[in-house]
Amino acid sequence: MDAEVIVVGAGPAGMMLAGELRLAGVDVVVLERLAERTGESRGLGFTARTMEVFDQRGLLPRFGEIEVSNVGHFGGVPVDFAVLDGAHQAAKTVPQSQTETVLEEWVTALGGDIRRRHAVVSVKNLDDRVEVEVEGSEGAHTLTAPYLVGCDGGRSAVRKAAGFDFPGTAATMEMYLADVRGLDLEPRMIGETLPGGMVMVGPLPGGITRLIVCERGTPARRRTAPPEFDEVAAAWKRLTGDDISHAEPVWVSAFGDATRQVTEYRRGRVFLAGDSAHIHLPAGGQGMNTGIQDAVNLGWKLGAVVKGRAPAGLLDTYHEERHPVGKRLLMNTQAQGLLFLSGPEVQPLRDVMRELIGYDEVSKHLAAMVSGLEIHYDVGGGTHPLLGRRMPNLALDGDARIGGSTEALRGGRGVLLDLADNPALRRRAAGWADRVDIVTAKPRGATPPSWPDGTAAVLVRPDGHVAWAAPGSHADLPMALRRWFGDPR
Image (tube, rainbow, N blue to C red; front, side, top):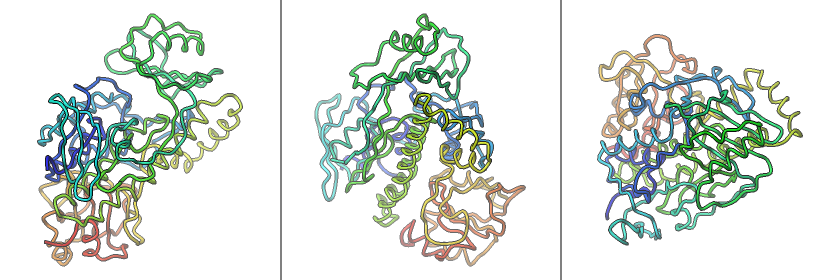
């Protein structure tokens, strides 16, 4: 075998997955057809959930000073994200190019093998391995590994070669995205609906302005090259009456509103994550963030199975947990597209939505949906409200190694928090100490609003989701440990 896992695609999802696999000690090879990073930034910023994910791996400081905000929207209708109970706000102006740089440096430091100029030609999904035919800088050759993950975007070569079904709806219109210099425009951070469509303006670092132009009636097309900036400027003038043709384009792209999702996230030994598994209108900046979270969900599971630390059936939970998340992503972006991009016939619906969002519960529901904070998984029955949800950041006293529950997850291992200094609990978990860190501590200071009083112990998966809690889980601790972490040593 050439590696234990082959990852195709060196974008944010692929790099996040490679880092997670390296934390688990997996020998991983990343194949990328491009010779170097493009520097383009289709994704911009992070949702609050992705901020949590990066924090739990200690990655946030690598981004430097991050501008955060509670200002958001749903289909162009403003939503106050301050209603959410989370440790982080959303990051607004981190370009995808910086995210890719940070993640690649992280993976490289962890010993990941990144091979550029390597394009996938074919895939054989066999009973005991995957064979990947690659056209690389050294010519055509074949790589083999027990598992393959396609993180190679909306036109995924892996998805096509492995025969995944990708149903959905084709694009009905074309829209433009351009980063430019030399413009002094009033920001339209959540967009502005105009008689002929919608425009968005956002200032970026370095004197760059991001423009998004959605002109109704522009037919969808499959381009082989990016559009010229003249096309963007002409559409902008038709919509706003302003001339921006004097601006200097940094890069220009076109996109559509196609909506598709694979029917299965796993076929045998091949998995898909990110845009390879789901494409949609980029409403609310959710695409890159969902792909990163796909990778975090899959990474620890694949690493545990490869290293013999978990049952093979654990890999089936990747589709079970992430396919519904992708389905809701497509649903909410389609809804936002109707609000944002339709004509005046939808104005009554926009008005009703604006009125409903004035209610805190509605605002909280929509903000949690767009930010990813609503996500919870089926981890077994019980009454504890945190079961299946992300562990809130809990400041801790009592263990000199860590200052809080988020810090305890830095190594990509499971964590058992013993909050009642219970020796019997620790003895029952001792057989899993090679893959689960046992931390005895007490909450320090004010606890997060979502923290249930009286919680005595919590088992947290490496992706930060609570797998067991006491009191309140129907399963006992050894049963939960076996389900997620395999048999004791």
